[in-house]
Amino acid sequence: QVQLVESGGGLVQAGGSLRLSCAVSGRTFSNYDGGWFRQAPGKEREFVAIFSWSGGGTNYADSVKGRFTISRDNAKSTLYLQMNSLKPEDTAVYYCAARYRGNGRFDYWGQGTQVTVSS
Image (cartoon, rainbow, N blue to C red):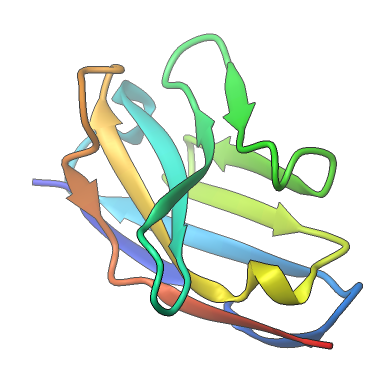
């Protein structure tokens, strides 16, 4: 089993920054894709960013490109999401997730951390 615990959420003004962290345990993190998703009130959960397990490939939702940066430290088994130029529409619960070597859907999820951006 893989356990994920997010931290770093909070309240920030528009234009500000936050960095989310996701501590991963239970398995060798380097074998897993790491992803960030978010869910705003009344909306479905949506993809934010992914960092592949091999080669360092990343991908982002169009809505966050150029503002958010996903990174990982396999030695620390931690996934990060640096969020800059935050907008009120970025307000959501942010979840980190993991899947084994790009294999289909994300099977492992954290409990989520709230990010609130005030205008």
